[in-house]
Image (tube, rainbow, N blue to C red):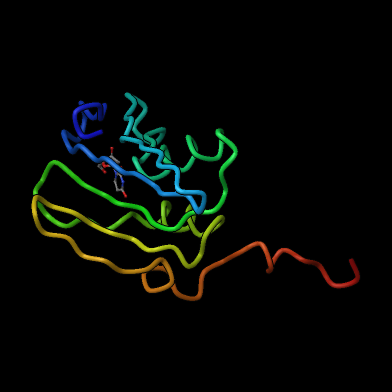
Length: 121
Ligand code: THU
């Protein structure tokens, strides 16, 4: 995925893979755009590929970047992944090093669908 990243503006390559509860793996890379705000992160690309294939439950995500440093997911991606699997594991990898944490740890007290329910409905 790192080699497929389209990141001519930041030169920062990101690759991500999610494993579904059913054991399937879907990968994604960051895709930038000249209109910078349209950039799609690798994690969200991977989740979208999985959802498009009918998968909505994730056990873990693995994230790698071109920097050789352990890199956590951005806030938008944390919220995006939380939509489907709030308890999933988050694994950052850099060469032979890796660090494992959880979405609950990275995004405490987050917004979620349960808060959308209106009184009286
Ligand atoms: N990026 C990701 O792909 N995932 C993250 O969690 C953080 C940032 C990308 C977006 C952009 O293409 C580049 O990294 C620099 O921000």
